[in-house]
Length: 241
Image 1 (cartoon, rainbow, N blue to C red):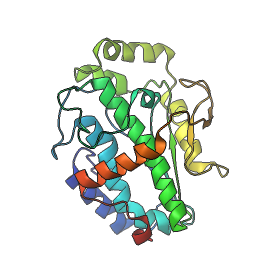
Image 2: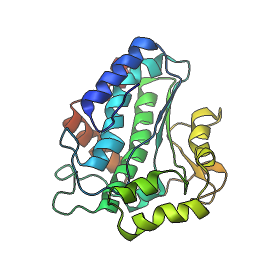
Image 3: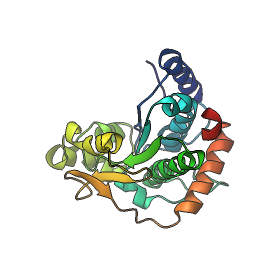
Image 4: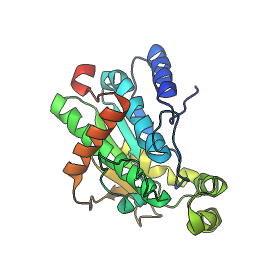
């Protein structure tokens, strides 16, 4: 069904259609979106990368929570990236990097937001006594069309120009790159709030990866504050139950 993650109106309409057709969602895999794009704004006035990669999925997930929580053991898997290491906790006073925009910095911020979203959502599931779990996964260096799309959009600088070329020779196939997300979604032993990725960061078999970034609690607090203020949508897990 049509879904434009850069439009809150589209997200809410698509979620309503899903709920109208399905009373249970066993697996919800949030797979953003855009990478290192030139500075821009969504139809809602959000910076393009944060608006698409995180805020779109924030509202999408919040609206679909009743069906996820109705499943016997629903899972929400949000796709992050090794680029999260170049991201920083969102600044509530300037979440869009106005006047200091850097395409890769904004991308890193959005991917760190994806990781913090998964951890924070799982904490809410635990607090509410829900059976659902939230996890994250990343595809490593995969030969998808993400790199070429970045270059065609005029983003990414030199790395954007080289990304598609190098991915064709060194990247994993798309099915191979999807394995970490699929393991997070289906491994019976997977623990909520954890991260799965390729063994060697960019490539390899899917394994549970260590969480090595400090500041998670503060990052989640800021992310929740920014997300709820910008979208007007609460992540109301207890109410959704």
